[in-house]
Length: 189
Image (cartoon, rainbow, N blue to C red; front, side, top):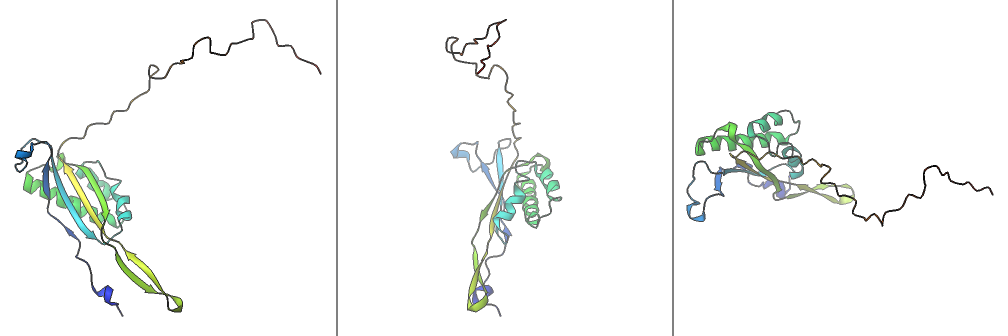
């Protein structure tokens, strides 16, 4: 028999429509989308019935990749949360292509986060008339796609000129007391 709390369920998981942010335009022109500017497409999936910890394992593998490359990589990850992430990426790509006339090949994942949603508190009967608490966690997933190309990361090689030289004066350095030709005298005791 289900308890009264179990019959009530939260809102079903849903993917909200994409919105666009335009960071590069002045505040007066923020409502207009200018072509060629660095624009971001935001898509959200809320109230997903999976723990945020489990989703974070999946989204860490695709952060910063091109969107189509991320979809290819997700097909080889054996986690249940990958289906939810694939659905969100496909929705964001479809919105970007239909609503904002972007090409799928040009988009990359600028930001993807899994925040915790409301926790459903349940209980399970235990021995001696006790009850154990069960936390059924939910996740709010947010994806930001951008059309701008990410800047390549530059590896800094440490050359000899960047290594700190020995700053001690010659007089402060320990002197080498052994002279050529002299051997140390051994003491016999």
